[in-house]
Image 1 (cartoon, rainbow, N blue to C red):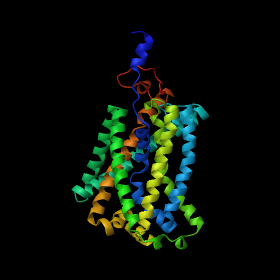
Image 2: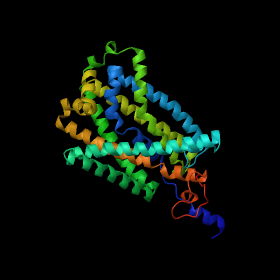
Image 3: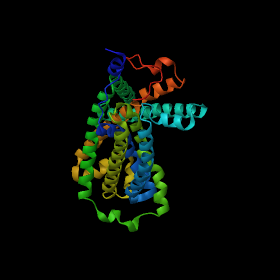
Image 4: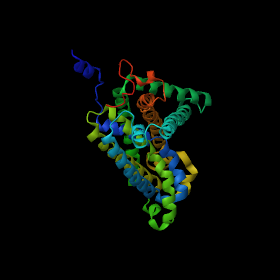
Length: 333
């Protein structure tokens, strides 16, 4: 085997599909936020929250367009960190922002894992705080090991998680919309356009996780073409789900009720038609969505670590993949 053949053999196989890459982003977006954001946005936009989500989705699509163009031009494992370096060079600004982004990912993963622990503890341990911590730590450990196994395993598990979440939320939306009270969504009862636009500052947070899709470039066979499609698909799926769920909730409950119920608003909206089964479905959704969000938050860690190592922010050893003798700084596909 000559040098070129050996190098080709050493390259990891890229087996992630467009759908799997998009599910990485959907899992990051459709996490626990949908449960908390509805009441917070409802306090500002009232029953027009669905419109707030639609506007936020449109803004996210514009940002997704930028990521798609950059991803096509620089399809690397470094994702957004590579785009930053290409724009500003590997200086202090890039280093500081890269570290902030790196640490933000860790904090977000910890926060979502804590939510998972809380839901799991409520189901099996009577809201015991100690068990909540155990479940949270256990989820982070399991998902970390999954990421160590490889991107193929991450993609398969994430696809399963997201399919379950989307199936339940789609069922919820269909059932509630079929039985809604149209008068609750009468535009005459909407607040001012200024308040609706103001609520976008809240609903836009539900879309922030889609940037992790940029890190899938290293696992896509043709990232220049497939990455933009994965980004657009993820934004479209998340926007559709958010709009449909908010229509179902605010077509069943008044804004005051949604604010009062808080994180249980989805379960309460499902009760008229699904009864106690609605509550069970929402708990299952919360467990799967938070697990998927943690998995998606941890996925970029490898690419970011190798990028930071290549830039001298980490020890050189962190720039090497396990089982390979790749040169330090190899962050491209």
